[in-house]
Length: 322
Ligand code: MTE
Image (cartoon, rainbow, N blue to C red; front, side, top):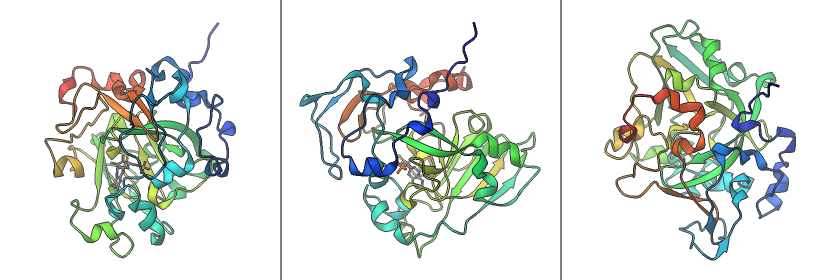
């Protein structure tokens, strides 16, 4: 008998996702019904931590509370996902994005698609992510700062967008750019980074089944501004800085593109940035992570998505992926 193998995001039906209001009202994590991550590749190695109030997320003290093996099976709350963010265009503090993104206007919005494509042009969000095509996917997000969350996104596979714009044979990489709006983004008024925020993927990484363009979360059709409205990339096997927010330009190019973090600190951040517990950041270990808000766990190679991505890196030097 033939059984179709489930994808990592198929372990939970989107209809089972508790409405976001439910989560907002519940401080606690949800339990066993969210068993999407029960597959072997996603199995936890055990996690312990101290309960902490959201908004004071510090290194948890290991040992106070012991959580079961199923800690990995649980979603972060809507509140956690939308109030603890990295989005330097709105400030460098974790609560700056939610505090400062209120006047950002994600509508109307267009995305310029340029470079090595047969169908370049100016696309609307609906052109790129038609409502009839959106789906829900639960992914782990592992930040390079050694914290992680489990987030239910809504959106479309980036491969759907790629096939719509039809890259030429010369397209070897895809480059992405975030909006720069000094009037609406207080962070870009200062030279914190070399704005615009830019990221990129190799074309096969971009076309991988896991690579996702999110346009909503928690079963909602829109993204909160602080999470990258109206559309942001989600690349779950790479450190979170690859998951670029509020995208205004997608360029298909022949050469490896400029990427913001690699350019700002090349000894600390690489182009590939695949999650790898064995390659430490120069200033901290990547072997473990804080699963917000109160967990601790061992970090998995490729953030647990090895099966779907390792073929893309055969022959490459593991220690140099960083
Ligand atoms: N995109 C832009 N434009 N600016 C940023 O500062 N931060 C990145 C990534 N995308 C960032 C960005 C980092 S470091 C992480 S960990 C994720 O966004 C965080 O996504 P989240 O806030 O939705 O959890």
